[in-house]
Image (cartoon, rainbow, N blue to C red; front, top):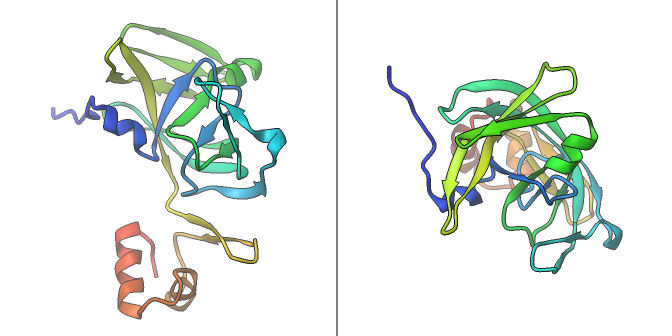
Length: 193
């Protein structure tokens, strides 16, 4: 039986679908708008203080629908991460353990990884992707965002490109590129026209 596994490289940390377990993060946060929905503008009150004491400005707060997968790439379950802070200053996707614990989640594990279990026991988030660092390692999970693009028009209105749509609508959403380029983009993103 062939087992696929995520590579143990630090470059993986910049993938929009890889989320680090963070025991010091007060909120879930991301540097990627991809797949975010229900966007609300951030404010200076939402700024996030990071490890070097710098303050990262939060541009938006929103939800991210997607699916969790284990280290072998196997589907675990669907979920929506709620009230995720987007900051273009962020380097990584962070899942806030304090936030999960305050919501009643249990976190258990060992040297090879751990899991967060929902209060009702029905949802488990596997943190089984081990990424070595110079001084040890970090644990991460794979949360694949649904194939949507959330974008903000110049007038401030959110536009969401759903997985199935007309070629004309996608043509407009992608900025009026040619029909051929629209179809190429749709194929590469898994969108159905």
